[in-house]
Image (cartoon, rainbow, N blue to C red; front, side, top):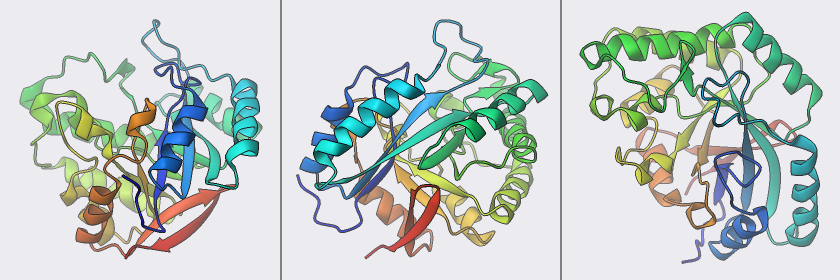
Length: 273
C-alpha cells in the first residue's frame, strides 16, 4: 500500500553491494516508489578485520557509485536517492585508524556507524554468558564509546542495542549498571553533534523488536538527543520502508517531534505529523 505521508524515509538499506545481500538497487528503488517513499539512502556494509572469514563486508566503492548514479539518473525525479555506508566500528588502534582513513578518502551522503562485533568476535554466532547480561551490554556500550572518542567522522549510530537481536535472553533484559555507560555514550554522541537510528529490521527476526527499545530511546531524549533517523535495515526489496508508521509512532511516543535525514553529510529535520 502506498504511504501518503510527506515524510516517508528509509536510511538503512542494503543491496548486492553488501556481502550479505543479493538484491539489485533498481528493485529496491522501484519498491520504494510503489510504497510512496520520499527519500531513501543506501547504507552498504564496510567492515575492517571482520572476524568471520566467510564474509568480509569489503565494499566495492567504485562499482557501487557507478550503479547508484546510473539508477539515480533514471529514477531521481520520482524519489530522492542517497548514497551512504554502514561502517563497522571495532575497538583497537588499527581498526580505528583504518576507519578514519576510509571515511576521509570516500565520499558519502550519510555515514552510519554500527558495532557488529564485541571484543574481537562477531555478534552473530557468539555464545555469551547470559548470567552476566548487564556486563555484556556495558562492554558493548563501552567499546562503542572508546571508538567514538577517537573517530567522529560519522552521522548516526546504528541499532545501538543490537545485542537484543541476536541473543534470546537479551530481548527482555532491563539495563542495570550498564545504563550509566549508555548515558556516557549518549552524552558523547550528543556533544559531537551525532544521532541514533530507529531500526525496524528486528521485527523480522525472532526478537520481533524495534531497536532501540522505547526506554533507551527515551533515555536518549532525556539526555538531550535530537537527531534520529529511521531505517528498515532491509536486505531484500520487499522490506524497504517496512514498519515506517510504527517507527514514527515510536518516535512520537518517546517525545520526539522530528525525524532526521541527511544529504551530503548535512542533516535536515522534518516534523512528524
